[in-house]
Amino acid sequence: MTKKTTANKLGALATALADAMADGFGDLSPSAAAAVLTLRQTETLGTTELAQVVGLSQPACTRMVDRLVADGLAQRRPARGRTVPIALTEKGRREGELIQARRLAVLRTVTEGLDKKERKDLDRLLDRLLSAVAADGAAPHRACRLCDTRVCDGKGCPRLAGDAAPLPAPAE
Image (cartoon, rainbow, N blue to C red):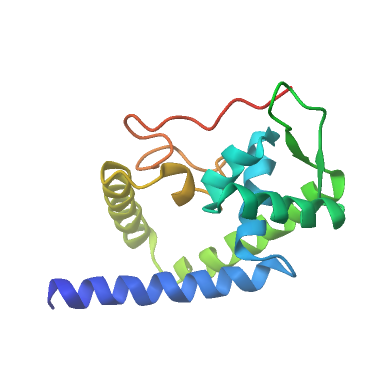
């Protein structure tokens, strides 16, 4: 087995998982689903910070937020200086729970066939791979934008590793 073969297999797995998880986003785009899941964890963010996490330009993120607001999933809160905090509505929180449950179901299905030792080995390898993502300078919040941080122990987590800045504090 060559390094290229291993990398290619990892890419194929990543693509298959991304496709399977996207099926659970319902009518939302991957960016909109990431925004809902990010807001589910942070309570509120300004458009600029949200754009950084979901990988959109600020104008594109504003248009996406407009759609989330029109769909009743998000709301704009009163401005704090130049920042207008975006928060989920109750409908948005419920949608976020559904998206996260579907995402985790896809991922659990993939690992069901592993025994306890294999799962432990995979967990160790994932910690190393995610640490490499963080060390490589990749945007840590982008890597974890779909994660349920409540179940993550932080090991290997790009958001929590090294000098990765935390997400901005929720706006009040």
